[in-house]
Image (cartoon, rainbow, N blue to C red):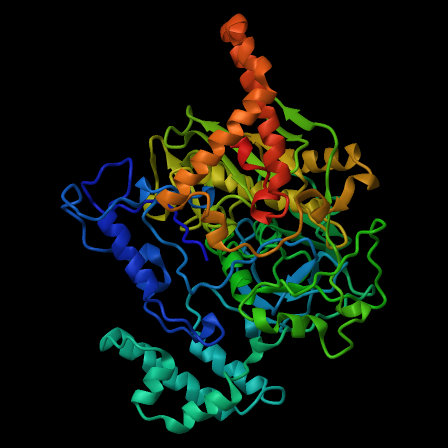
Length: 631
């Protein structure tokens, strides 16, 4: 997996602000590479928090950056996927693949449960996100008290080991010998302790052999790793038409307001859905059954979408299975099943087995369902005063967001951010951890007097206090407010989804000083301005989601000097032929003058964009996000 970088921590280093300290880069790389690979799930990891969370790592400050003999990695050519120049390493080489949208409908590998207080109502709610069949989409269901409360994980105090023991006790009928699992988990804990305390550098099997656990090594070789609850996909529960549910669709928005998004159907109402829906949409969870127990508002967690995103990453994805009694309407020729499974998650090797189930692999139920995307053919815009949201037709999934608070909150000022799902840093690291914000304490108190923020704001909301933050310890990004606005916009755009298809439309969306009310109006305008013909298979827009090796992506950026020289010679020969064919530009250059040269540059630039789009169509991280020529 490509090394990704995000945010520069305060390391008190005297290195230039234009680039990271090379010594710290090397130190953090060594820390990241020392992370041991686990058996199957992050639940088995008992690593120190300084390794699990790079933000908690506090290396010794570097005081000799100018005299360092370490080559600055920024001086080397880099690909556009590794443009971030921060020294903080997010994902190590052994980290599992992050969940991403696919050209086929997906769902969760297994369910997860979170509980907490609602930000605006102050009510306690327990929420379980479960896999769902293709065509069902994302929907909310009210369940009786006590249904999922025992599964709830409140905050970050969950003991992973206790949860694992509970899973073993409840799944003994389906899984293999529990004693084998318990012994292997205990030995693995010893292995991790030996790494931390004694500096053991070998693999887990090396440790077992060194400690003379001969029988365990032999059984591990014969039977393989033990099967836990997460070793096979969780079967979805079919949606019943008799139960009261709310589809996550714009038609069910209840009294659109600037502060939050609420859905309602009959007597059933659920609020604060934007963060969860944003995480599900950006991570590619197209079908999900969301069970709510207790309050009428989703838990605020830490004030961001990070808690939901982390659980989605732990669960992983797979192709959503089909229901025999539910037909998903598709345009002619849209169905073209993949040659091999591309489901993501921690059980990638067994994804195909889990997706096919116990039936015939060639049956209709085993075939993944293609995902459609809304592709408007004209500009769509809504304007309210100086605020607006506009979509420009383009074969990309790009969002550009801006806001202006420079008068009431100078610490926020003017901020702009542009993010593309398949080009830039994953949603988990770029947008999910952004908290909500207010421009002043007076605004927060006014909202509370109006009946909002009844759950409290401490630790879950950024409060601006003129040119500083009321609680700077919880600020995660300098431009966190604009990241939060983009996070909310994705959550509201997810309400465009229907029948398990994409919610985020195809195009370049530009927004400025928006809120949930304006986002809802934009979604409604999009639906009014488009028709059934504008829903097209996502792969027709951007090409298939095929795996791409990092070496292939880096081949243009990193090459030997000899190869680079040879390529330069070939380029000169090709350039000579092109000059002969397009000699009219050279002949008329003097006559055109500066204006002619500018026009010529624009024409060549437009042709370059088209060529890059055509050549990148097979690369999902290039084609699905537009082209390098646009940058």
